[in-house]
Length: 293
Image (tube, rainbow, N blue to C red; front, side):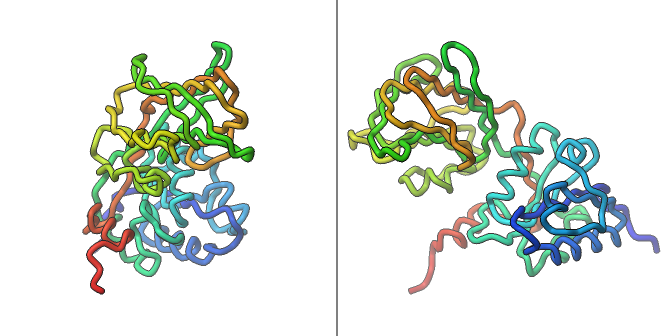
């Protein structure tokens, strides 16, 4: 009897860009996918750092044009990078956890081939996750545009003084904030930096964003959740050394009168989950809820 066609015929492999740590896992997974009848390609940066030359190499544009699934071997940082690069192409991603916490990497490294086999057999679910589309306006012009899956953060730099900013939502004044910074987070990012700043956890299906102040000068400035249909505007009114980051990526120096406008990105990223995936089971495991003492 012939083997049924795989659910995803063309698959891209993406690994951590920190040397040859996952070369063996990439090779094993690639050979397994080939044995299941899949076309396999290796992301360009992954090929360079892993030293693998067994599979065709493609940049993200090539992956977006040809791949039907991207498998990320790494941690949440690797998933964030892949999501930002692939969302506009509509390529879904699944993560094999080779990091620490792994809030977004559902496939256990020790069960990689078994769970990927189940996904190829059609036993999976797909979930859309919202991304942020931040822009920085300076002197009326758009100075930078980006994409973020977890969060956009305005915060004080190395000088260490409080920054002051005015926050508006859909043009309506919300508050004048003096603090170490402000986090705008998606539901996915609610378990990242926002959580460590006492923000709430949002289930991924909730259509909202979080605004979480970092060490506010006025203690009554609390985290709030707003609709993800709105435009969040952060105007820098006093900043000695303010900076902006997207998913913890390279900083952008902010000046007085800069406006950071955050909207929902038009392109969500789709996560592929293996059989048995549960968001709340993941939270119990990663956050050590319901542990017996």
